[in-house]
Image 1: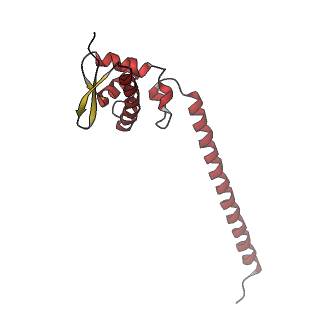
Image 2 (image 1 turned 90 degrees about the vertical axis):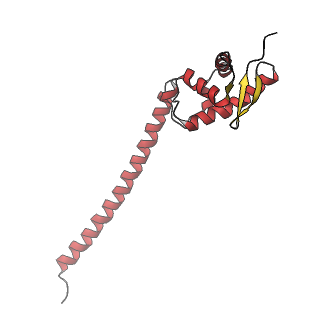
Image 3 (image 1 turned 135 degrees about the vertical axis):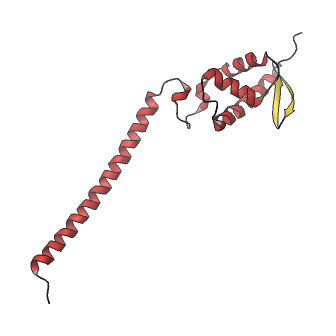
Amino acid sequence: MAEIRTVTTLKRKRDEISASIRMYEKKIAQARADMAHVAAAIRIFEASDRPKDLAQYVDHYRLFKRGEPWAICAAALTKGPLSTKDLAMALMKAKGMDLTDDVLTKTIGHRLIHSLRMQEQRGRVKREGKQKAMLTWRLPEAR
């Protein structure tokens, strides 16, 4: 039996509406993605100077003023020899960073090694040896 013309017209209309809904859903998804990007940009520009407010992927080189890491490490080394990890933890504590973040500790430690080696060339710090695959540092004796 042949379909009634009304049913055929309604099915076609249903398909058109369904296609329109799919198109609008894609536009809504794109609008949501755009809004997320704008919100992320706002978060970046509104970030305060407090390290806890920064996202994990923010460049850590800009967290410290020139010479600040060495000054904090030199103060920590007055108590005795410390490993690179201990110095990184002291640096993070002084800046109010999350001490439980192992990735951040490792990042700060790698950056600190270069700084400490430069200070070693200047005679401001001495390498004492290795302890569990980490360098141990101390201040040189006063002359």
